Length: 87
Image (cartoon, rainbow, N blue to C red):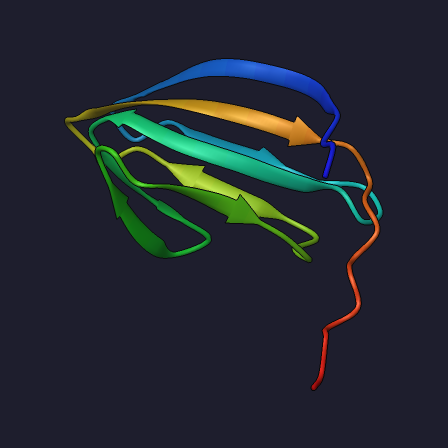
């Protein structure tokens, strides 16, 4: 399975700073938190956590006031969703 990366960013959010992303269409984001902790759409993640964000019209990230967070953010190309194999 090939995945095409359209954009990769190293993001640093300082002292309560926020970042909002609006993935278009069937795009998905891949996040890897390298330092600190922050909520992603209200769900807290910690240093070392990583995962995909799919089927979201808005992705919101917010650093904790008085702290910093550093993350890698990948914007991945549209993809086909595989059919589930049912035996």
